[in-house]
Length: 284
Length: 284
Image (cartoon, rainbow over all chains, first blue to last red; front, side, top):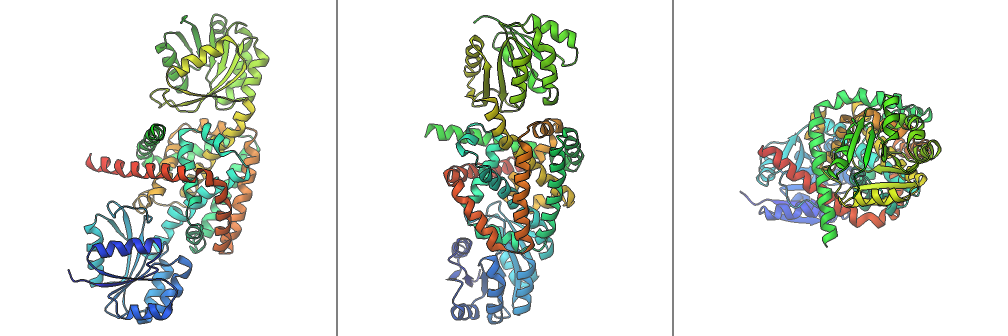
Protein backbone atom coordinates (compact mmCIF):
# COMPACT_ATOMS: atom_id res chain seq x y z
CA UNK A 1 0.00 0.00 0.00
CA UNK A 2 1.22 3.45 -0.90
CA UNK A 3 2.01 5.67 2.06
CA UNK A 4 -0.38 8.62 2.10
CA UNK A 5 0.09 12.03 3.61
CA UNK A 6 -2.85 12.71 5.93
CA UNK A 7 -3.62 16.06 7.54
CA UNK A 8 -6.00 16.04 10.49
CA UNK A 9 -7.42 19.45 11.27
CA UNK A 10 -8.30 19.30 14.94
CA UNK A 11 -5.85 16.42 15.21
CA UNK A 12 -5.00 17.44 18.76
CA UNK A 13 -8.59 16.82 19.94
CA UNK A 14 -9.59 13.47 21.39
CA UNK A 15 -11.16 11.90 18.28
CA UNK A 16 -8.65 13.62 16.00
CA UNK A 17 -5.68 12.22 17.87
CA UNK A 18 -7.37 8.78 18.06
CA UNK A 19 -7.54 8.69 14.26
CA UNK A 20 -4.06 10.18 14.01
CA UNK A 21 -2.67 7.20 15.93
CA UNK A 22 -4.85 4.86 13.90
CA UNK A 23 -3.55 6.07 10.52
CA UNK A 24 0.03 6.20 11.74
CA UNK A 25 -0.19 2.60 12.92
CA UNK A 26 -1.57 1.73 9.48
CA UNK A 27 1.66 3.11 8.00
CA UNK A 28 0.71 6.61 6.90
CA UNK A 29 2.28 9.97 7.50
CA UNK A 30 0.03 12.00 9.79
CA UNK A 31 0.13 15.71 10.17
CA UNK A 32 -1.89 16.91 13.18
CA UNK A 33 -3.05 20.48 13.03
CA UNK A 34 -4.71 22.52 15.71
CA UNK A 35 -7.93 23.91 14.20
CA UNK A 36 -7.25 27.68 14.40
CA UNK A 37 -4.31 28.74 12.20
CA UNK A 38 -5.89 29.16 8.76
CA UNK A 39 -2.60 29.68 6.90
CA UNK A 40 -1.10 26.50 8.36
CA UNK A 41 -4.30 24.59 7.55
CA UNK A 42 -4.28 25.75 3.92
CA UNK A 43 -0.65 24.86 3.38
CA UNK A 44 -1.15 21.41 4.85
CA UNK A 45 -4.30 20.87 2.79
CA UNK A 46 -2.49 21.75 -0.41
CA UNK A 47 0.14 19.07 0.02
CA UNK A 48 -2.02 16.27 1.56
CA UNK A 49 -3.54 13.18 -0.03
CA UNK A 50 -6.22 13.07 2.64
CA UNK A 51 -7.59 15.98 4.68
CA UNK A 52 -9.68 15.09 7.71
CA UNK A 53 -11.72 17.77 9.48
CA UNK A 54 -12.16 16.79 13.13
CA UNK A 55 -13.29 19.94 14.89
CA UNK A 56 -16.43 20.60 17.00
CA UNK A 57 -19.69 20.43 14.99
CA UNK A 58 -20.26 24.16 15.38
CA UNK A 59 -16.94 24.95 13.63
CA UNK A 60 -16.99 22.20 11.01
CA UNK A 61 -18.63 24.04 8.13
CA UNK A 62 -16.57 27.16 8.72
CA UNK A 63 -13.36 25.16 8.61
CA UNK A 64 -14.51 23.29 5.48
CA UNK A 65 -15.29 26.59 3.77
CA UNK A 66 -11.77 27.83 4.51
CA UNK A 67 -9.82 24.70 3.70
CA UNK A 68 -11.95 23.15 0.94
CA UNK A 69 -10.64 25.21 -2.00
CA UNK A 70 -7.04 24.23 -1.12
CA UNK A 71 -7.60 20.46 -1.15
CA UNK A 72 -6.39 19.01 -4.44
CA UNK A 73 -8.98 17.56 -6.84
CA UNK A 74 -7.27 14.15 -6.68
CA UNK A 75 -7.24 14.14 -2.85
CA UNK A 76 -9.86 13.12 -0.29
CA UNK A 77 -11.66 15.52 2.03
CA UNK A 78 -13.55 13.93 4.92
CA UNK A 79 -14.98 15.00 8.27
CA UNK A 80 -15.63 13.04 11.48
CA UNK A 81 -18.55 14.92 12.99
CA UNK A 82 -21.79 13.46 14.35
CA UNK A 83 -23.91 15.19 11.72
CA UNK A 84 -23.57 14.64 8.01
CA UNK A 85 -25.99 16.63 5.79
CA UNK A 86 -24.52 20.11 6.22
CA UNK A 87 -20.81 19.14 6.39
CA UNK A 88 -21.13 16.97 3.26
CA UNK A 89 -22.97 19.77 1.45
CA UNK A 90 -20.17 22.19 2.39
CA UNK A 91 -17.42 19.76 1.35
CA UNK A 92 -19.06 19.29 -2.06
CA UNK A 93 -19.55 23.02 -2.45
CA UNK A 94 -16.18 24.32 -1.31
CA UNK A 95 -13.87 21.66 -2.71
CA UNK A 96 -13.31 19.79 -5.97
CA UNK A 97 -11.72 16.87 -4.14
CA UNK A 98 -13.27 13.48 -3.41
CA UNK A 99 -15.65 13.70 -0.45
CA UNK A 100 -16.66 11.08 2.14
CA UNK A 101 -18.70 12.13 5.18
CA UNK A 102 -17.63 9.88 8.03
CA UNK A 103 -19.13 9.26 11.47
CA UNK A 104 -17.38 6.84 13.80
CA UNK A 105 -20.08 5.59 16.20
CA UNK A 106 -17.77 5.29 19.14
CA UNK A 107 -15.84 7.54 21.48
CA UNK A 108 -12.12 8.10 21.94
CA UNK A 109 -12.11 5.47 24.73
CA UNK A 110 -12.44 2.64 22.19
CA UNK A 111 -9.38 0.42 22.27
CA UNK A 112 -9.61 -0.53 18.62
CA UNK A 113 -11.94 -0.48 15.64
CA UNK A 114 -12.94 -4.09 16.22
CA UNK A 115 -16.76 -4.40 16.12
CA UNK A 116 -17.14 -0.63 16.10
CA UNK A 117 -19.53 0.87 13.59
CA UNK A 118 -18.37 3.59 11.21
CA UNK A 119 -20.98 5.28 9.04
CA UNK A 120 -19.77 6.43 5.63
CA UNK A 121 -21.56 8.88 3.36
CA UNK A 122 -19.56 8.72 0.12
CA UNK A 123 -20.66 11.86 -1.69
CA UNK A 124 -18.06 12.18 -4.45
CA UNK A 125 -15.86 9.21 -3.96
CA UNK A 126 -14.00 6.94 -6.28
CA UNK A 127 -10.52 5.57 -5.62
CA UNK A 128 -10.37 6.96 -2.08
CA UNK A 129 -13.52 5.09 -1.14
CA UNK A 130 -11.78 1.73 -1.61
CA UNK A 131 -8.74 3.04 0.27
CA UNK A 132 -10.82 4.14 3.26
CA UNK A 133 -13.08 1.08 3.46
CA UNK A 134 -10.05 -1.24 3.14
CA UNK A 135 -8.16 0.43 5.92
CA UNK A 136 -11.18 0.50 8.27
CA UNK A 137 -12.36 -3.07 7.54
CA UNK A 138 -8.84 -4.43 7.96
CA UNK A 139 -9.09 -3.43 11.63
CA UNK A 140 -12.49 -5.08 12.11
CA UNK A 141 -14.79 -2.05 11.81
CA UNK A 142 -18.42 -2.58 10.75
CA UNK A 143 -19.04 -0.18 7.88
CA UNK A 144 -22.47 1.20 7.05
CA UNK A 145 -23.04 3.24 3.91
CA UNK A 146 -26.01 5.60 4.01
CA UNK A 147 -27.02 9.02 2.75
CA UNK A 148 -26.24 12.10 4.85
CA UNK A 149 -29.98 12.78 5.20
CA UNK A 150 -30.81 9.30 6.48
CA UNK A 151 -27.83 9.50 8.81
CA UNK A 152 -29.04 12.72 10.41
CA UNK A 153 -32.61 11.44 10.72
CA UNK A 154 -31.50 8.29 12.54
CA UNK A 155 -29.03 10.16 14.75
CA UNK A 156 -31.92 12.36 15.86
CA UNK A 157 -33.01 9.34 17.92
CA UNK A 158 -29.77 7.38 18.40
CA UNK A 159 -27.82 10.39 19.65
CA UNK A 160 -29.76 13.64 20.15
CA UNK A 161 -32.98 12.33 21.71
CA UNK A 162 -31.20 9.54 23.58
CA UNK A 163 -28.94 12.20 25.15
CA UNK A 164 -31.89 14.49 25.91
CA UNK A 165 -33.65 11.55 27.56
CA UNK A 166 -30.63 10.78 29.77
CA UNK A 167 -30.02 14.49 30.50
CA UNK A 168 -33.62 14.94 31.64
CA UNK A 169 -33.27 12.14 34.19
CA UNK A 170 -30.15 13.87 35.49
CA UNK A 171 -31.70 17.35 35.57
CA UNK A 172 -34.70 15.89 37.42
CA UNK A 173 -32.57 14.26 40.11
CA UNK A 174 -30.62 17.49 40.57
CA UNK A 175 -33.78 19.61 40.63
CA UNK A 176 -35.46 17.37 43.23
CA UNK A 177 -32.12 17.56 45.05
CA UNK A 178 -32.24 13.88 45.88
CA UNK A 179 -29.34 12.46 47.85
CA UNK A 180 -27.12 10.48 45.46
CA UNK A 181 -25.97 8.00 48.11
CA UNK A 182 -29.59 7.30 49.04
CA UNK A 183 -30.45 6.70 45.40
CA UNK A 184 -27.59 4.25 45.20
CA UNK A 185 -28.49 2.45 48.42
CA UNK A 186 -32.12 2.02 47.48
CA UNK A 187 -31.48 1.38 43.82
CA UNK A 188 -32.94 -1.42 41.71
CA UNK A 189 -30.50 -3.13 39.34
CA UNK A 190 -32.15 -1.41 36.34
CA UNK A 191 -31.88 1.98 37.98
CA UNK A 192 -28.15 1.38 38.50
CA UNK A 193 -27.82 1.00 34.73
CA UNK A 194 -29.73 4.24 34.14
CA UNK A 195 -27.66 6.10 36.74
CA UNK A 196 -24.43 4.93 35.12
CA UNK A 197 -25.64 6.48 31.84
CA UNK A 198 -26.61 9.71 33.62
CA UNK A 199 -23.34 9.94 35.56
CA UNK A 200 -21.37 9.19 32.40
CA UNK A 201 -23.11 11.89 30.37
CA UNK A 202 -22.47 14.61 32.95
CA UNK A 203 -18.81 13.54 33.15
CA UNK A 204 -18.21 14.21 29.43
CA UNK A 205 -17.62 17.36 27.41
CA UNK A 206 -20.98 19.21 27.49
CA UNK A 207 -20.24 20.91 24.17
CA UNK A 208 -20.28 17.64 22.23
CA UNK A 209 -23.80 16.80 23.46
CA UNK A 210 -25.05 20.36 23.07
CA UNK A 211 -23.91 20.53 19.43
CA UNK A 212 -25.29 17.09 18.51
CA UNK A 213 -28.65 18.36 19.78
CA UNK A 214 -28.64 21.97 18.63
CA UNK A 215 -27.19 21.53 15.12
CA UNK A 216 -29.48 18.74 13.92
CA UNK A 217 -32.55 20.44 12.42
CA UNK A 218 -34.74 17.34 12.93
CA UNK A 219 -34.38 17.52 16.71
CA UNK A 220 -36.93 20.36 16.98
CA UNK A 221 -39.71 18.13 15.70
CA UNK A 222 -38.59 15.18 17.84
CA UNK A 223 -38.55 17.31 21.00
CA UNK A 224 -42.04 18.59 20.16
CA UNK A 225 -43.27 15.00 19.82
CA UNK A 226 -41.51 13.99 23.07
CA UNK A 227 -43.13 16.95 24.76
CA UNK A 228 -46.61 15.95 23.55
CA UNK A 229 -46.05 12.38 24.73
CA UNK A 230 -45.00 13.65 28.15
CA UNK A 231 -48.17 15.77 28.16
CA UNK A 232 -50.23 12.60 27.74
CA UNK A 233 -48.43 10.90 30.62
CA UNK A 234 -48.76 14.01 32.77
CA UNK A 235 -52.51 13.99 32.21
CA UNK A 236 -52.78 10.33 33.25
CA UNK A 237 -50.64 10.97 36.33
CA UNK A 238 -52.62 14.06 37.32
CA UNK A 239 -55.81 12.01 37.08
CA UNK A 240 -54.18 9.11 38.95
CA UNK A 241 -55.22 6.86 36.06
CA UNK A 242 -53.20 3.63 36.15
CA UNK A 243 -55.54 2.17 33.52
CA UNK A 244 -54.66 4.72 30.88
CA UNK A 245 -50.92 4.34 31.45
CA UNK A 246 -51.18 0.55 31.27
CA UNK A 247 -53.19 0.91 28.07
CA UNK A 248 -50.58 3.16 26.43
CA UNK A 249 -47.82 0.75 27.44
CA UNK A 250 -49.63 -2.26 26.16
CA UNK A 251 -50.45 -0.46 22.88
CA UNK A 252 -46.78 0.29 22.25
CA UNK A 253 -45.63 -3.19 23.23
CA UNK A 254 -46.67 -4.56 19.80
CA UNK A 255 -44.32 -2.09 18.13
CA UNK A 256 -41.41 -3.35 20.25
CA UNK A 257 -42.20 -7.06 19.86
CA UNK A 258 -39.49 -7.53 17.19
CA UNK A 259 -36.82 -6.57 19.71
CA UNK A 260 -38.42 -8.16 22.77
CA UNK A 261 -36.31 -11.33 22.94
CA UNK A 262 -33.08 -9.50 22.20
CA UNK A 263 -33.81 -6.73 24.71
CA UNK A 264 -34.50 -9.23 27.45
CA UNK A 265 -31.31 -11.12 26.62
CA UNK A 266 -29.20 -7.96 26.43
CA UNK A 267 -30.63 -6.50 29.63
CA UNK A 268 -29.92 -9.78 31.41
CA UNK A 269 -26.31 -9.57 30.21
CA UNK A 270 -26.12 -5.98 31.51
CA UNK A 271 -27.62 -6.86 34.89
CA UNK A 272 -25.29 -9.82 35.28
CA UNK A 273 -22.30 -7.60 34.40
CA UNK A 274 -23.43 -5.14 37.11
CA UNK A 275 -23.43 -7.87 39.73
CA UNK A 276 -19.92 -8.95 38.83
CA UNK A 277 -18.73 -5.33 38.89
CA UNK A 278 -20.11 -5.07 42.45
CA UNK A 279 -18.15 -8.18 43.37
CA UNK A 280 -15.00 -6.66 41.88
CA UNK A 281 -15.53 -3.34 43.71
CA UNK A 282 -16.03 -5.23 46.97
CA UNK A 283 -12.94 -7.38 46.61
CA UNK A 284 -10.70 -4.39 45.82
CA UNK B 1 -35.86 -22.67 63.83
CA UNK B 2 -39.54 -23.22 64.41
CA UNK B 3 -41.50 -24.08 61.30
CA UNK B 4 -43.98 -21.28 60.58
CA UNK B 5 -47.22 -21.41 58.67
CA UNK B 6 -47.10 -18.76 55.96
CA UNK B 7 -50.05 -17.69 53.83
CA UNK B 8 -49.28 -15.77 50.66
CA UNK B 9 -52.28 -13.94 49.26
CA UNK B 10 -51.53 -13.60 45.57
CA UNK B 11 -49.14 -16.51 45.96
CA UNK B 12 -49.84 -17.64 42.42
CA UNK B 13 -48.47 -14.37 40.96
CA UNK B 14 -44.85 -14.15 39.88
CA UNK B 15 -43.41 -12.42 42.98
CA UNK B 16 -45.79 -14.28 45.28
CA UNK B 17 -44.72 -17.67 43.96
CA UNK B 18 -41.05 -16.60 44.05
CA UNK B 19 -41.37 -15.92 47.79
CA UNK B 20 -43.46 -19.07 48.22
CA UNK B 21 -40.57 -21.17 46.91
CA UNK B 22 -38.14 -19.11 48.98
CA UNK B 23 -39.95 -19.72 52.28
CA UNK B 24 -40.55 -23.38 51.48
CA UNK B 25 -36.85 -23.88 50.79
CA UNK B 26 -36.18 -22.20 54.13
CA UNK B 27 -38.26 -24.95 55.76
CA UNK B 28 -41.64 -23.31 56.26
CA UNK B 29 -45.13 -24.41 55.38
CA UNK B 30 -46.44 -22.19 52.59
CA UNK B 31 -50.05 -21.75 51.71
CA UNK B 32 -50.51 -20.00 48.34
CA UNK B 33 -53.83 -18.28 47.88
CA UNK B 34 -55.24 -16.68 44.78
CA UNK B 35 -56.21 -13.11 45.69
CA UNK B 36 -59.98 -13.23 45.05
CA UNK B 37 -61.80 -15.62 47.41
CA UNK B 38 -62.32 -13.54 50.57
CA UNK B 39 -63.62 -16.43 52.71
CA UNK B 40 -60.61 -18.59 51.86
CA UNK B 41 -58.28 -15.66 52.56
CA UNK B 42 -59.83 -15.00 55.97
CA UNK B 43 -59.66 -18.63 57.04
CA UNK B 44 -56.02 -18.87 55.98
CA UNK B 45 -55.19 -15.59 57.73
CA UNK B 46 -56.76 -16.80 60.95
CA UNK B 47 -54.54 -19.86 61.20
CA UNK B 48 -51.25 -18.42 59.87
CA UNK B 49 -48.15 -17.19 61.68
CA UNK B 50 -47.26 -14.95 58.76
CA UNK B 51 -49.63 -13.44 56.20
CA UNK B 52 -48.04 -11.94 53.09
CA UNK B 53 -50.08 -9.76 50.77
CA UNK B 54 -48.63 -9.98 47.25
CA UNK B 55 -51.31 -8.61 44.96
CA UNK B 56 -51.15 -5.71 42.45
CA UNK B 57 -50.66 -2.29 44.07
CA UNK B 58 -54.16 -1.21 43.11
CA UNK B 59 -55.71 -4.09 45.09
CA UNK B 60 -53.34 -4.12 48.05
CA UNK B 61 -55.20 -1.82 50.43
CA UNK B 62 -58.53 -3.42 49.65
CA UNK B 63 -57.12 -6.88 50.41
CA UNK B 64 -55.47 -5.61 53.61
CA UNK B 65 -58.77 -4.11 54.75
CA UNK B 66 -60.51 -7.46 54.26
CA UNK B 67 -57.88 -9.75 55.70
CA UNK B 68 -56.30 -7.53 58.38
CA UNK B 69 -58.90 -8.08 61.13
CA UNK B 70 -58.46 -11.87 60.82
CA UNK B 71 -54.68 -11.92 61.29
CA UNK B 72 -53.87 -12.89 64.90
CA UNK B 73 -52.27 -10.23 67.14
CA UNK B 74 -49.22 -12.48 67.67
CA UNK B 75 -48.78 -13.04 63.90
CA UNK B 76 -47.02 -10.99 61.21
CA UNK B 77 -48.78 -9.16 58.41
CA UNK B 78 -46.57 -7.94 55.57
CA UNK B 79 -46.93 -6.85 51.96
CA UNK B 80 -44.54 -6.96 49.00
CA UNK B 81 -45.71 -4.00 46.92
CA UNK B 82 -43.55 -1.25 45.41
CA UNK B 83 -45.20 1.45 47.52
CA UNK B 84 -45.14 1.55 51.27
CA UNK B 85 -46.93 4.52 52.91
CA UNK B 86 -50.54 3.57 52.19
CA UNK B 87 -50.22 -0.23 52.56
CA UNK B 88 -48.41 0.16 55.91
CA UNK B 89 -51.03 2.64 57.09
CA UNK B 90 -53.77 0.16 56.16
CA UNK B 91 -52.00 -2.77 57.82
CA UNK B 92 -51.64 -0.78 61.06
CA UNK B 93 -55.26 0.34 60.88
CA UNK B 94 -56.98 -2.92 59.96
CA UNK B 95 -54.96 -5.40 61.98
CA UNK B 96 -53.62 -5.80 65.50
CA UNK B 97 -50.82 -8.04 64.29
CA UNK B 98 -47.16 -7.16 63.85
CA UNK B 99 -46.61 -5.20 60.63
CA UNK B 100 -43.56 -4.98 58.34
CA UNK B 101 -43.87 -3.23 54.99
CA UNK B 102 -41.53 -5.02 52.60
CA UNK B 103 -40.24 -4.12 49.15
CA UNK B 104 -37.91 -6.54 47.38
CA UNK B 105 -35.95 -4.40 44.88
CA UNK B 106 -35.70 -7.13 42.29
CA UNK B 107 -37.96 -8.95 39.92
CA UNK B 108 -39.11 -12.58 39.79
CA UNK B 109 -36.21 -13.38 37.43
CA UNK B 110 -33.68 -13.18 40.26
CA UNK B 111 -32.03 -16.52 40.84
CA UNK B 112 -31.47 -15.95 44.55
CA UNK B 113 -31.47 -13.25 47.20
CA UNK B 114 -27.69 -12.92 47.02
CA UNK B 115 -26.75 -9.21 46.72
CA UNK B 116 -30.37 -8.24 46.18
CA UNK B 117 -31.72 -5.32 48.18
CA UNK B 118 -34.85 -5.72 50.26
CA UNK B 119 -36.32 -2.61 51.88
CA UNK B 120 -38.07 -3.15 55.19
CA UNK B 121 -40.41 -0.69 56.88
CA UNK B 122 -40.98 -2.23 60.31
CA UNK B 123 -44.07 -0.41 61.54
CA UNK B 124 -45.16 -2.55 64.51
CA UNK B 125 -42.58 -5.23 64.68
CA UNK B 126 -40.97 -7.07 67.50
CA UNK B 127 -40.16 -10.77 67.44
CA UNK B 128 -41.12 -11.20 63.77
CA UNK B 129 -38.62 -8.54 62.74
CA UNK B 130 -35.69 -10.69 63.87
CA UNK B 131 -37.29 -13.72 62.19
CA UNK B 132 -37.65 -11.93 58.85
CA UNK B 133 -34.24 -10.23 58.82
CA UNK B 134 -32.53 -13.51 59.82
CA UNK B 135 -34.18 -15.48 57.05
CA UNK B 136 -33.43 -12.84 54.39
CA UNK B 137 -29.82 -12.14 55.48
CA UNK B 138 -29.06 -15.85 55.65
CA UNK B 139 -29.54 -15.94 51.86
CA UNK B 140 -27.29 -12.94 51.27
CA UNK B 141 -29.88 -10.17 50.87
CA UNK B 142 -28.86 -6.57 51.58
CA UNK B 143 -31.45 -5.20 54.00
CA UNK B 144 -32.30 -1.52 54.22
CA UNK B 145 -34.57 -0.20 56.96
CA UNK B 146 -36.35 3.06 56.19
CA UNK B 147 -39.67 4.77 56.85
CA UNK B 148 -42.57 4.19 54.43
CA UNK B 149 -42.55 7.90 53.57
CA UNK B 150 -38.86 7.99 52.72
CA UNK B 151 -39.29 4.78 50.73
CA UNK B 152 -42.04 6.26 48.58
CA UNK B 153 -40.14 9.51 48.03
CA UNK B 154 -37.02 7.69 46.81
CA UNK B 155 -39.03 5.25 44.66
CA UNK B 156 -40.55 8.30 42.92
CA UNK B 157 -37.17 8.59 41.21
CA UNK B 158 -35.75 5.05 41.36
CA UNK B 159 -38.88 3.45 39.94
CA UNK B 160 -41.68 5.79 38.78
CA UNK B 161 -39.64 8.52 37.05
CA UNK B 162 -37.01 6.07 35.80
CA UNK B 163 -39.82 4.08 34.16
CA UNK B 164 -41.46 7.22 32.75
CA UNK B 165 -38.08 8.26 31.33
CA UNK B 166 -37.61 4.88 29.62
CA UNK B 167 -41.25 4.76 28.45
CA UNK B 168 -40.93 8.19 26.86
CA UNK B 169 -37.96 7.06 24.78
CA UNK B 170 -40.05 4.10 23.62
CA UNK B 171 -43.17 6.15 22.88
CA UNK B 172 -41.01 8.60 20.91
CA UNK B 173 -39.48 5.89 18.72
CA UNK B 174 -42.92 4.43 18.08
CA UNK B 175 -44.44 7.85 17.34
CA UNK B 176 -41.65 8.78 14.90
CA UNK B 177 -42.21 5.30 13.45
CA UNK B 178 -38.49 4.72 13.13
CA UNK B 179 -37.37 1.38 11.74
CA UNK B 180 -36.10 -0.78 14.62
CA UNK B 181 -33.56 -2.65 12.48
CA UNK B 182 -32.14 0.66 11.25
CA UNK B 183 -31.83 1.91 14.82
CA UNK B 184 -29.96 -1.25 15.69
CA UNK B 185 -27.67 -1.10 12.66
CA UNK B 186 -26.72 2.51 13.21
CA UNK B 187 -26.62 2.30 16.97
CA UNK B 188 -23.88 3.58 19.26
CA UNK B 189 -22.90 1.26 22.11
CA UNK B 190 -24.64 3.55 24.63
CA UNK B 191 -27.84 3.58 22.59
CA UNK B 192 -27.83 -0.21 22.59
CA UNK B 193 -27.95 -0.08 26.40
CA UNK B 194 -30.86 2.37 26.31
CA UNK B 195 -32.73 0.28 23.74
CA UNK B 196 -32.32 -2.83 25.87
CA UNK B 197 -34.01 -0.95 28.74
CA UNK B 198 -36.80 0.24 26.42
CA UNK B 199 -37.36 -3.18 24.87
CA UNK B 200 -37.34 -4.80 28.30
CA UNK B 201 -39.90 -2.38 29.73
CA UNK B 202 -42.37 -2.94 26.91
CA UNK B 203 -41.93 -6.70 27.27
CA UNK B 204 -43.13 -6.69 30.90
CA UNK B 205 -46.55 -6.50 32.52
CA UNK B 206 -47.78 -2.93 31.81
CA UNK B 207 -49.95 -2.94 34.92
CA UNK B 208 -46.97 -3.15 37.28
CA UNK B 209 -45.40 -0.01 35.77
CA UNK B 210 -48.70 1.83 35.52
CA UNK B 211 -49.50 1.24 39.20
CA UNK B 212 -46.01 2.18 40.44
CA UNK B 213 -46.52 5.48 38.62
CA UNK B 214 -50.19 6.20 39.26
CA UNK B 215 -50.41 5.21 42.92
CA UNK B 216 -47.44 7.16 44.22
CA UNK B 217 -48.74 10.63 45.13
CA UNK B 218 -45.28 12.22 44.80
CA UNK B 219 -45.07 11.38 41.09
CA UNK B 220 -47.38 14.28 40.14
CA UNK B 221 -44.86 16.81 41.39
CA UNK B 222 -41.92 14.98 39.83
CA UNK B 223 -43.65 14.84 36.43
CA UNK B 224 -44.39 18.56 36.67
CA UNK B 225 -40.71 19.25 37.36
CA UNK B 226 -39.64 16.94 34.51
CA UNK B 227 -42.06 18.75 32.24
CA UNK B 228 -40.63 22.16 33.17
CA UNK B 229 -37.08 20.89 32.56
CA UNK B 230 -38.11 19.59 29.15
CA UNK B 231 -39.65 23.01 28.48
CA UNK B 232 -36.23 24.60 29.09
CA UNK B 233 -34.54 22.17 26.70
CA UNK B 234 -37.28 22.68 24.12
CA UNK B 235 -36.69 26.42 24.23
CA UNK B 236 -32.93 25.98 23.68
CA UNK B 237 -33.57 23.57 20.80
CA UNK B 238 -36.14 25.85 19.18
CA UNK B 239 -33.61 28.67 19.33
CA UNK B 240 -30.83 26.36 18.08
CA UNK B 241 -28.80 27.43 21.10
CA UNK B 242 -25.96 24.94 21.71
CA UNK B 243 -24.42 27.34 24.22
CA UNK B 244 -27.40 27.25 26.56
CA UNK B 245 -27.59 23.46 26.49
CA UNK B 246 -23.87 23.16 27.16
CA UNK B 247 -24.25 25.61 30.02
CA UNK B 248 -27.09 23.64 31.63
CA UNK B 249 -25.09 20.42 31.29
CA UNK B 250 -21.97 21.91 32.75
CA UNK B 251 -23.98 23.44 35.64
CA UNK B 252 -25.41 20.05 36.57
CA UNK B 253 -22.10 18.25 36.23
CA UNK B 254 -20.98 19.52 39.66
CA UNK B 255 -24.00 17.84 41.24
CA UNK B 256 -23.01 14.50 39.68
CA UNK B 257 -19.30 14.76 40.47
CA UNK B 258 -19.61 12.40 43.47
CA UNK B 259 -20.71 9.58 41.16
CA UNK B 260 -18.53 10.47 38.19
CA UNK B 261 -15.77 7.89 38.70
CA UNK B 262 -18.21 5.12 39.56
CA UNK B 263 -20.51 5.94 36.62
CA UNK B 264 -17.60 5.84 34.18
CA UNK B 265 -16.41 2.54 35.64
CA UNK B 266 -19.90 1.00 35.62
CA UNK B 267 -20.70 2.18 32.11
CA UNK B 268 -17.41 0.73 30.89
CA UNK B 269 -18.38 -2.60 32.46
CA UNK B 270 -21.77 -2.40 30.71
CA UNK B 271 -20.26 -1.53 27.33
CA UNK B 272 -17.72 -4.31 27.62
CA UNK B 273 -20.49 -6.77 28.53
CA UNK B 274 -22.40 -5.67 25.41
CA UNK B 275 -19.43 -6.42 23.18
CA UNK B 276 -19.03 -9.91 24.60
CA UNK B 277 -22.76 -10.55 24.21
CA UNK B 278 -22.40 -9.62 20.51
CA UNK B 279 -19.56 -12.14 20.26
CA UNK B 280 -21.75 -14.80 21.87
CA UNK B 281 -24.69 -14.01 19.56
CA UNK B 282 -22.41 -14.23 16.55
CA UNK B 283 -20.81 -17.52 17.52
CA UNK B 284 -24.20 -19.16 18.17
